[in-house]
Amino acid sequence: MTLGMDRDATKHRRWQNAFLAGGIVFGMAALADAAGTIYALSAPGYVFEDGELTGEILVFALAVALMLGCVALGRRHDRGRAALVAEHGHWLPAPAERDGQGQVDLDAETARLRTLVLRSVGLVLVWLAVLAGVVAGFVAMSASADHLLKSGARVTGEVLGVHPQSRSEGTIHVAYPVGDRYRYADIVWDSGRPYTQGQQITVVYDKADPTRVRTLDETNDDPTLTWVLPMVTAAGGIGLVLSVIAAVNWRRRHRAVLATGWRIASVTVVPDKPMRSNRHLPDIHVDYRDGSRITLRAATSTHGAAPLKNEPNRRAWIGGTDRDMVVLFPHGRWSEPPYAVPAYALNLRAAPQPAAAPVPEDPEQVALVERKVRWFMIAVFGWGVTLVAVSVLLLLLDLLWPMFFVVVVGSLAPIPLTRLYFRRMRAGLEEK
Image 1 (cartoon, rainbow, N blue to C red):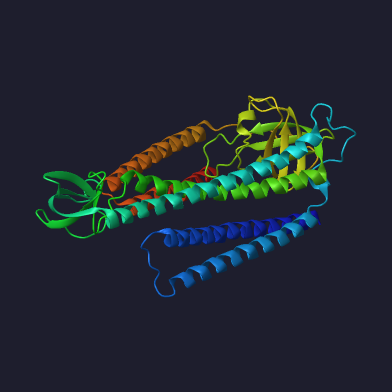
Image 2: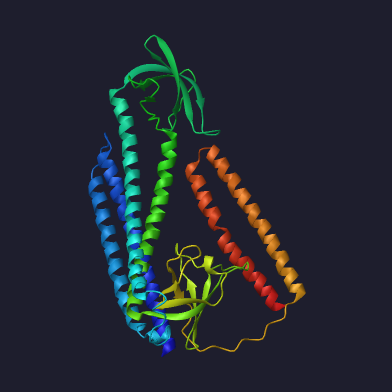
């Protein structure tokens, strides 16, 4: 029965996580569609094609509907999983008379978990404000270029030089008359229109600041802004997703600890130090006062367990169930207030098992592993150097999207290759 319960809880948890991920994806799609529509409505001179605005509204409505559907289904599986893991004894022993209540105000620490939820929600609002600022930046940049086109002085200039994107960001060097003298400027070339040396073109300059120029086709936006705004957009999107996940998970943990309370225990933080294919966050070995044990694993969070690895069998309190557990340390590595670490159970609570006899090391196998790990590290270093070199080359060629693709794919490619390498190495060692 316990095994069946564990399988059902795992199934509910997987569906719950899948719907959470779907809700975040559709929410980001709705946010991106709304941001693009707002930008188009705010940008001067932008004209919607026939049916374009209606299509944008329909896409937004569909994305919001799918997001709400994923949220509703996720809550349904959340309730189903909560019913299956309601038996706290699978993860926590029976409550003792005090469980160390006098050493730490456990009621206050339970309420403090809600503060972590509110902090994550605050970060969500911060990242939304960042993305709104990015949209405002794009709108302002487009409006500035359009205003210059409408109000600037138009003169006939000459192309003195063309600098394609092979060496740096594409520019054209132009000369244009301002009053009785000529001025010179480098204009960002991003329209794709061909230019030749000596070609006559229309140059538009600001009457108050003649150094601020553009052409009829080249907006000549600030190169710094054209780099910074997309980078901030990517950072804001990633930060928003992580903040939403953190808010949802801390809310679940807070509710779980409210239902179970805290149990005092001795815990040992064991980081994943050896080089292996499946790296993970530190394990937390828990020994309750009744002699039962359970192994937890730290969840991804800014409240990490790695800084607490140097003190074995330290006192702590455990709360929650299954995937929604919290380890409460009396204090962090540097801070005095109690320190909460999110975690999830790797197994059910069980009586202590006798320690297995240590397996003697084979010197030949140890030397083989060290050699393979050394060559692996050399290969990873070479891959990193190659990736940086290719990225710099594409940057110099102004191939921004290919560079972004190379960086993403090049950063993720070593993950499956590492798994395959160490899986084969492990298989070879087992055969010997």
